[in-house]
Structures are given as structure tokens and as C-alpha cells.
Image 1 (tube, rainbow over the protein chains, first blue to last red):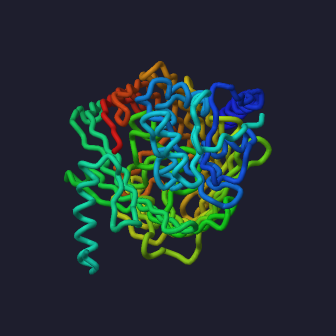
Image 2: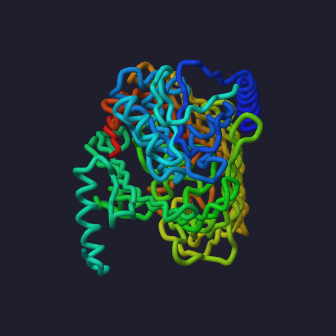
Image 3: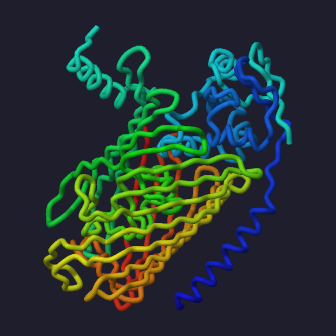
Length: 150
Length: 371
């Protein structure tokens, strides 16, 4: 195959795939809630902004404080599906994703893990700038519940 | 409490090995408030090669990553890699400081870093680094192999970077621009301390993540090929390294979901030389598709290296590190199994066809892990 034909073929494949990208739309389910430390000065986040934070693309809150992501450990029943709903990837992929972020120098460490929903809420309540995804119906205590706007 | 430098060093050594072998936290503590994060990768495998008719158990890299947020604005990262090699009939382990940089975050859109990096050439080179566990396959694409292992692209750079990212529209837009020493006189010799000329390489990357798991990007690299070094026994018969300029343009497309992983990158590389070396144009392309079935991921990869003639720079130097003598097609099939949370087993076979030569196969079994 000539170089020119290969370029044209590659270009066509790219066009088809790029077009399919724009058909894709991230959706938010009602299967989880987002909690944050009480000092966080926002009460709601846009869906895109939430994704920026959970994917470590945005690392600070509007007041400049650092976003600290806390996740539910995979050993807890239901934790994997919670991550899948929030991040659209499996728990295994999420672990590798954050590990990759550490190796890229984007994160200094992988997210802290809680061994139960209660522990996650407690960690969020105690850690300035913390944010976590927990199941609907979780008793959130002093942690602040953030509304996610579509 | 020990307060001398020797004391800190002793504590460091003790906690380093405790952290390395016993602690799940992977944090080295110097004192109550000062922490260095340690992560590591390694892999061990078995390789059967038609070329040479050998088969062997093989140690992979042992890679240590140190990172630290010095304060809210300044952070550093260092990656130290121990690489088992076989060169000139000798088995040996080389240590290499693969990356080291210090970074100052002005804001999310402007982060300034100085040190040794992975060159901003697409997706794979910036994402997977030296940890075999992170990528689905056993090996990197040949074009992205490291400089001293037959790689074709300039994988590492020494200089500075300005990078940033932020929400544009509904998704993340990022960029990375760098100025560096560029390549060495031979492609497996990186100018980490002394540059061979006064010219610098200019490179950059821009990418946009559409939705979740999808990324489209483009990269460029303009740099000198310094020439000058005398050669002996190179595959093309030159007696000195060629001098010229290198221009690279690349695009990449990545899609990753809970069931599918698709990576595709292509680069157009042009080498323009002073006489008597002929200019060359090289096209590099790979595409990789994986499908996740629970803990199992079967995958395929196709690699293509097209060149209009043997390249003077890539063909110079150590013949074993310069495999690009003709158009090359590599077909790879394999399967990855997630053995545990932080380790994976991979079985892979590749068929390599160079124009004018018989195709050869290589089989791999590999156990990679992170800690």
C-alpha cells in the first residue's frame, strides 16, 4: 500500500471515529450523590466540572483549596458499580487511571480509599477539600452534599 | 531525634526499604509533615524468539517513582529505572534516571517544569512511561521503544515544559510545549549533561478529551540532528554521524470505555541532512484494539513503519539498536488477565515482517505488577 493511500485510509478512519465522538454524551444517573468537606464554598457543580474534578483535570476548588478525592474501596459490595456510574469505567480501570495520573505527575498520590461508606463520609468530613461519591441514601453527617447540575 | 544530614539519610534508607517491601502506604516519611510518595513497577517474563532460535526467562525493568508536593505550588517527580540488558555479549543491569523534574503551578492553565521528561509526542509516550503493568500489551510499539532499545522517535527530552489544561466547552483541553536539548549525535545517546550543538528542539502537544474516555490530539517536534560523532561498524557504512534537522508531526485518537480500549497514533517524520546523506521521509503508525471481558482483555495491534529509503540517523550507531532497515509491519495478538488488584498476566505473540526479509515471530509470557 502506498504512503499516500495509507494516509487517506487513516484519515477516513479518523473522521469516522471523531464523528462518533460527538454523538457520545455523558449522562448522570441518580444512583449516587457527591459529598464534600463542609469548608468547600460551593453547593453545586456542573456535570462537566464534576467530571473535571473526579478525573483530576481540575485539582482546586474555586477558593483555591486542593481537591482531595476519596473513593470507596473495591472490597465494599457495590463500590465497583458506584465507580462505574460516576466515572464510566470499571473499578479496575479507575485504579489504573489514577495510577497513570500519579506516574504522569498530575497527582502526587492515588486517591485515599475508605473501607466502608461510613468511613468515606468520615474521611470527607475530616479532610479539607475532600470530595467523594457515595450511594444515594447515605447518612452524610457534617459532610456537604453537592448538587450536580446536568 | 536525628537532625543531621546523615541522620535524615539513615532514616530515609530504613524507611525506603520498609516502604518498599512491607508498607502498603508507599509513603516515605522524613518527619511528621514531610512525605515522599513512592510507587514502583516491574515485570518478569518468558520470551521465545524465532530469530536466533533462543528462549529465555527475562527480567523486565525495575522502576521506582518518587513524587512530592513541596508546597501548594511546587512539586517534583523522579523516576529511577533499573534495566536488564544484553549488549555486546554481556548480560547486565543498567540504572537510568528516566525522568526528573521540578514543577511550578502558576494556575491550571500554566504549569512550568524544568528537567528530564518524556517528549510530548502523542498519547502513549506521555501516558505509560516505564511501567509495563500500565499498558495492556507486553511491549511498547517499536517506534515508541526507548532510545537504547531500538525506538525511532525522540522519547526523552531535557529542557523545560509549559503545560496546562482546563474545561473548554464540555470537556478538557490540554497543551504541552517544550524546549529541549533534542537528540544526541546518535539516537541512543541522550544529551543529559553536554549538548552536541547550540540549537534546541521545540516540541508540543495539544489534546481535547471529548466526553469521558475519548481523546483526540496532535503533536509536533522540530529539532537538530547534531552529527559529528565518529561511527564504526554502522549498518549503512557511514563513518560519522549525520548532521541535519528533524521534523515530526503526529495525531492520535484514543477511546477507552468499560468494555473497549482503542489507541491509534501516527507520525510523519522527515530528516533533512547536509550532503552526502540523503533526506528521508518516514511514516509511523500503530493501532491497538482491546476488549474487556471481566478480568480478561484480548487485544490486537498493528504497527507499520514506512520509509522511502534507509535513514542515515536512525541507521547509524549500534546496529542492534537500529532495526529500521526497511518497511516494517508488525502484527500482535495477545490476552491480558488481571490476576489481582495490582498485577497482570499477559501472553502475546508477534509476527514481524521487514521488506525483503523473511517474517519472524516472537512469543511472550509476562507477569507485571505495581506496588
